[in-house]
Length: 364
Ligand SMILES: Cc1ncc(COP(=O)(O)O)c(C=O)c1O
Image 1 (cartoon, rainbow, N blue to C red):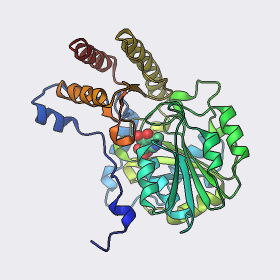
Image 2 (tube, rainbow, N blue to C red):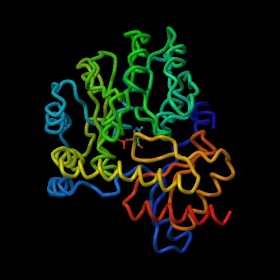
Image 3 (cartoon, rainbow, N blue to C red):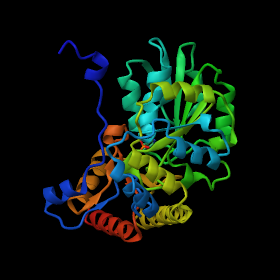
Image 4 (cartoon, helix red, strand yellow):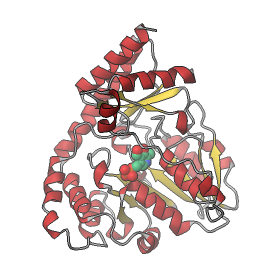
């Protein structure tokens, strides 16, 4: 159809992680574990559920367009002002708002090739020129990305830690990079997995920096287990935030999502449990894989990527795992054809994955 722009026609849609119910039906299984979408295996924060439930009687009312209570709590948490915080429909909702707010027609975008697919869809869908800079050994090559910044560059996107590789950009790399970024370029620092990486001394938590041209994106989807609610937030200079507030959909996130986020923020015990379970899970997965002669890439997030060095093998194994009731994410569509990614699950889910993969590898 002539009315569909070329960049949309050729856009590769985001492929979501699939549903447990569909896998059960398709393969006639009664047990399926989903380790495909980097979700919180503990489920949602119980306090969040209770708070969301309490909003239901008011579902006929529009949500607070200013997100006042949740933004206030976030501002307190990060020792900043209300004017430095925005909330939206997941961090991807805010990402989309950033693109709509700041990009003029000639502007260009720089990011890493095969980084978070959600950003790739937004960037390619924007119709702007995007410089997808190859990674080096599954890591962002910030020096090469800085080389691609030109007079048209408006947005640079960095996922730190990255999904799907699990790698992260270090303090030194980030500092050196920022020295080469002009003030007129907006750097999106997507810290969806920050809490899993923050124990590393060389991880650059953006809250320890104050750059007027950096916007930090964070989410309630991972640590707080609220992916289904769609609630995320961003922290930045008040002038960036006030302009984003003009462009965002007025009533995102929903009332239930705002209440859930607010309650989850106070659920310290749940957060600690999640972080502990995740770090233990990563160690279990890595050592279990190693004992089978399989090496996982180092990961600072809540998943590990396994490079089999062979596209057919990685794809086949992920399909065979699916047939056995283990949902992992084959990364062919992300530009990593020899890799699949497995998210940390509950200990018994991790064990089930290792057991099934072990059998598949032993059987050839
Ligand atoms: C790097 C990265 N950013 C953002 C998101 C999406 O987060 P949200 O659910 O807040 O939109 C994900 C989800 O997998 C992610 O991996």
